[in-house]
Length: 247
Image 1: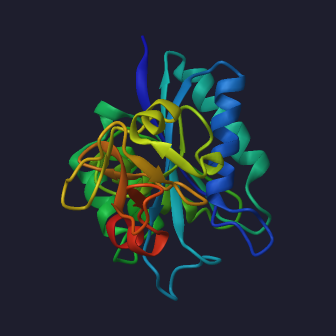
Image 2: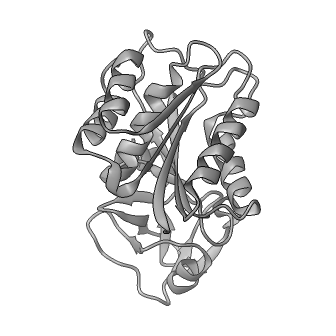
Image 3: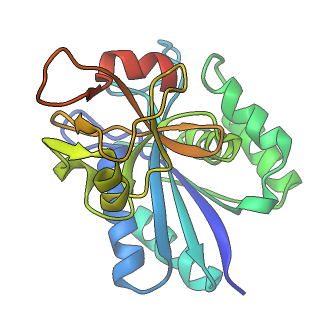
């Protein structure tokens, strides 16, 4: 039976490694290359900045939304990948759950991880209570805190931004697209301003150098703002503005 699965990872990484986002994209490609599942999106979720929490620069975790009918293979592949690819000196963590398995308590855990120092012990208790897969790799395994938070935040449908979507690699989407073409190029649901004014199909959008679709109301949204040129009608909102909406 095919289910939708959320796979949360938090590598904590080190000053030389590429980071959790990079690791999540490599895992996503591996899942598809192994024909273990269909990856719909990978999202980045900002967690709490606090000197009591070890992190290198961003303290973010990542979540893959995957459609798969082979959970044993999927979980084995993810576990094997994390055990071999967590950065030296990191405290990697992995959480896996089906969408309908994620209780409101897991969502609350994710929200709390954005503004509270949480404990690894409580993460294990919560995972056991709701029968979720949770495992730590390397170091002291504190990455389980962020991994569990990632699946809760993604399930909430109102946190984070996408770092990978089905279709063309979003880092390669640069230049001017019509709204219709942009939706055809990658799996975004809406293209609109923060006050819900939607772009028309033929409106031209300057995507800048890196598209960062947000997750709001369980939809993938590209937020835009009016341009001051006749070459195109809209600019995508810059990263600095998106942080207020997604972090």
